[in-house]
Each structure stands twice: as C-alpha cells, then as structure tokens.
Length: 362
Image (cartoon, rainbow, N blue to C red):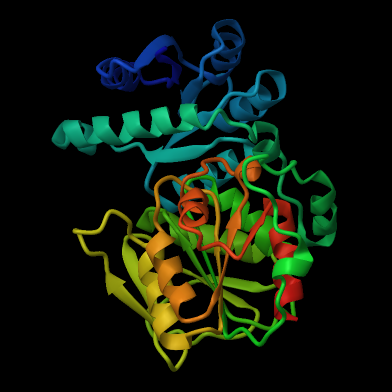
C-alpha cells in the first residue's frame, strides 16, 4: 500500500514540485495539498495521511502552530522544510519541539540543479518516516522542560519494546572514571539530545562530545539552544577546543570531528566520499584510539547504521556502549544496528539515559 502524503506550502511552485517528486515514486501517493496551517489541520483530519510535509512561513497560521495542533488532534509524522539560515535553524528546532519528526533544507537551487538527488533524499525520508509508524508521536510532541523540572521526565518514559528488553540498571551501570561520554544520533536527535542533556547536573564530571547529523547552518543555533536549556555548558566545537568536565561539544555540520590523546578536538573538512558530515563512526573511532576503555558511548534515534562501526572499535578496546530502546526512538535505525551487532552493553528508554549517565559517571 502506498504511503499517503499531504503537502503543505503557501508557494504554488513548491507545492507542485514536491507533489511531482513524491508522485514519481510508486510507493508514495500525494492525497492532498494545503496552502496554510489552518488548511493543513483540516486536511490532516479529513484525509488521515501517513506523513505531512510542512513549510514554516505561511499566511493564516504558521507551520509550528499547525504542527502543534495536528499533534493534539490527529498525531501524524511531519517533515518540515526549512531555510538554511540561523533563523531558519531556530524555527526548525521549534518545530521539532512541537512534534515534527525531521526536516529538509528548502533549497530551490538544489531542486533545479540536482533533481535526481533531491528526489532520492525526499522520497527516502518520507518512506523511512512512514515505516517507523511513529510509535512515539505523543512523546516527541511533548515540550522539552527547562532544567528546573527535568526530574519529571522519568515518570513519562514510554514502555520498552517487547523485542529488545531494557537492561536493568544493576547489570549495566558501571561506575568508573570515564574520560569521555560520546553521543551519536540522527533523525529525532535534536529532541532526544535535549531530553538526555537536560537531566545532567551542572557538576557532571566527564567531558561530552555530541554528533548529530545536521547541516552546517544549523549546529551553532542548536548548540546555543541546548546551552540555554541545560545545566551543563554546550557549544559548537571548534578546532583546538579542549575536552573539559561538564562541557558538551557539538560537532559542526558539514565537517568531521576527531579527538586526540591530549583531549584536543580536531575539526576536519567533510569528506565528500562519506554520507554523513559529521559522522558518528569517525568520532567514535578517534575516541577509541585516544581513550581506549575510558569511553562511554551512547547511540540514539536515527536513520541508517552510522555509529555501528565506531561502537565496534570502542568495544574492542573495552569501552561501554549503550543504545536507545526501540519504543522511544523516532527511527530505530542506528540503535538497532548496534543492538543487532551485539555491541550494546545496555538498552534504555530515552528518558532513563540521562539519569544512568549521571550514575555511571559519578
């Protein structure tokens, strides 16, 4: 059965072009279009699409308000289109907080210059989001609390997947002097990282590196957002930065981040041969070489298998690897790859990971 999609955008050209691209895939059916947020809500309730593509800037009602209303009335996976600007990044992060699953840059030049690449990327996103069945729609739509109230998160954790048992804390939380916590994620990662990091205390004793698949224009705004929400400090990593306890360094989009044995960050140009810029495997691999068994790595929600090879390198030198459980993932791709390869020392619901990190590193 074809995946049913509702296309929402106030630009007639963009509505038509997105509809044409999606309709060219036999596995996708565009069941309707809308020109503003209010129409989007009405069409979502009437047509019950599997996925909605949503613009932000529209008359009558903007995209974020529409997403919030859709999540309340008829929860449906939403893929946002966003501009590659700092403001576009901020707005997109707001939309993800409101319940959107993922985003794609709204770049008219790419559509004209690389139509085949745009088609492949857009259709893959739509199909992957639809396959996820959005088990966690209500969870992802929940607002991210400010640090003062993060303790309430644990009580709302979704039940674990029956296929992958959650590891009991006593079996996996090994207290030791970890020299580094490394967290990798992709689709669903911005909200997931907020949920984890807002649970960490200001005196968290280990340095943290974050690898989130994200365009270059977005990572600075995302780091600033995390920094405003968390007790720990968060910043976009720069070449030459030193790892420090209680400071999380976010890999800059479009580049690769590595760590050396002195605890210094190296930022390298993004290699065109690599699918992911930044790439979790590269950062995990450098951490394994620099710190051997003193790394605690976590693989969160995301499409694909980035992080699996890096996790294997970490396991070979004695480090610990945790994975997010299926039930709390937006896309159970990256954690599943780690679990299926028997590389996970523990599997936790998202809302438990921050607490277990604090315990393991205390």
